[in-house]
Image (cartoon, rainbow, N blue to C red; front, top):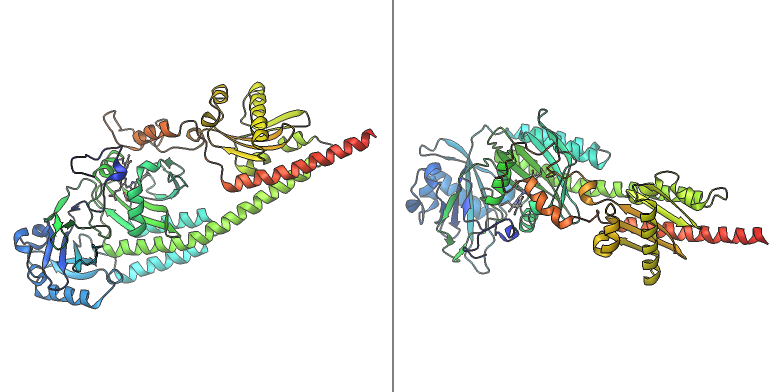
Length: 524
Ligand code: BLA
């Protein structure tokens, strides 16, 4: 992205957020060459935190900037540890009088091949008394035992939200889960009692763009302690040994996207922190924390403990979601077996047996279903009028027969059959199974805009009432943009649903065949 090209709402997935050239002013960032301990880059906060002028700090030896003791100690620490992350934080003292307890957080940044090794030292003066190690340890131990006891995924996530809130003191802690298209849903929440709930609300993928999700797969935690902060520069802009801007992927003070700060401010958020939840190395979701009263600054040790809980949760949720998936597939097998048995009942027509209750809907997660067989038709749930049903069934029978397909899944009737969709404005997705000779089972889904609770929906109770028309970036605005993209689509049909439809179809074809044989015998 060239500097001339401003970041706006359309191109924000292209903002290079890992090289902002700036940090959050709650601390200071120093880039030190490992070979000689000289400072190559520093943030302008070096003045506030260490009492040195930027021009004095640049080129100086670390011992001259931090004091002989702490400077030498940190350089020895760096030389001794090929992997620095597990040993963070290192406690030092800062301030002009060297009397402020400070966390030094160290890492080696990604560098171009062959570049001279450097270390990034970020100093966060302690603004609150950190939880002592035994307290943090006990809180984490209790949390882990609790997580281990949870019997279902929702219980596991709910527990995790409670414990992260207890540990970090944020007003609201949410577990935010991505779907296959990276839209998100708040699937668990722990909050201050007087706040309204975001539980169950969905947000479009654009609210957390692709490059941010990629960064969060590498660095598992980020804190914006004060949404209203004024960023401070890292100088010089380029790292002198490479001529390139410093890669802040693994930094803890990295200045975040101004677009995101605007979004948070419009949501009324004063401080935000999020922790990555991963499944097979891919971002599964986030533990998203908000503070409303103003800035909030959990110290590094507490953040590290929360990050550890996030990592533990990542491991547990893989096992738990596998268990939940098995339970769901057993439930679906039971539904299927029941429907198949009923469809063979000689006293009831197959059509009536299938639509007598909501089981056909539950089988694949549909809002409505239509069965056309043995010369009749019946429906259950949310379906169009009779004439509409007949049109739809006719179209699907033709389409399935023409393609010689047994099952077809359509997420947008408007895309697949624009004329038909115009006549059937309430149908967005259709899963169709062809039995034979124009006999079909159709499952219908409402538009995704209607079937889920969107966090930005202006009709939604949870939208901040303070949002005026001048606001250009907020859950409401991103919802409106996103609505244009997905309008006319249902939630996509999962592979399992398509397989289940295929399995039911085979059984029904057999049931029809047996019924046909019975009729022939009866006639003879
Ligand atoms: C980042 N967006 C984020 C993050 C969250 C959200 C959690 C991670 C950073 C953090 O911890 O604060 C979104 N936060 C949410 C959502 C909820 C919430 C959905 O609490 C719901 C309850 N954001 C937009 C639009 C753009 C955008 C339209 O809404 C771009 C056009 C960008 N979001 C954006 C960017 C980042 C981001 C660039 C990365 C910030 C960074 O790490 O630098």
